[in-house]
Amino acid sequence: MRVSRNQLNIASMKVNVKKLMSTIKSLLEGFNYDASDTSYKYQGEGDKVDMVQFLVVGSKNVDAYTKFVISVEATVENAKRLIEKDKTFVKGRGKIIFKSELILDYDEKWSKDPVLHFFKGIYEKYVYKDTRKDYETKISSEMFEVRDEVKKLAEVRK
Image (cartoon, rainbow, N blue to C red):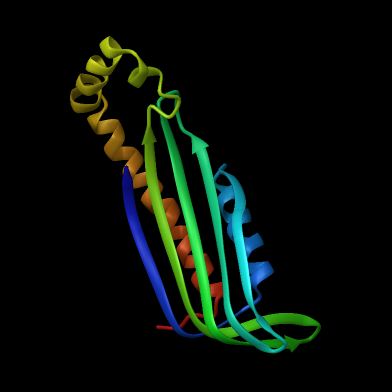
C-alpha cells in the first residue's frame, strides 16, 4: 500500500552519483532499513552523459505483520561529466522520486488460508486501523527526512 510519493525536479543538478547512492543507503540504514542499490544505468561517452539512473530500496520489518519500504529513484539527463578536485560529478537536468509504502502481511501468512484471510479483513478494518495510521505517519516522516538530506547533497535550491 503506497503511503506517500514525492518528486524533485531539478533544472540543473550537480552530483557525485556514487556519493549520492551511498548517502541514501546510509540514511536508510540510519533508520534501521536493509538498504541496497537495486539498479544502476549509465549511458554516455566521454564528457557527454545522456543518462544516469539508479534505484536504492530500503526495507524493514516493523512487526510480525508490517514491513516498511522506501525507494529512491534518481535520473540525470542531458548532462556533462565534470572532474573537480579528483572527484567526478554529473551536471544536468535531474529528477529524484521518493516513494514509501507499507506492506501488510508481508509473509502472506494470513492470505494463504481462506479462514485467516477472512479474519485478516476484520483485523485490518477494525483492530489494526490506528496502528496502520501511526505507521503511515512514521514512514512518511522517515521518507521526507531522507528527501531533505538528498536535496542538500544534490545541490538543489528552490
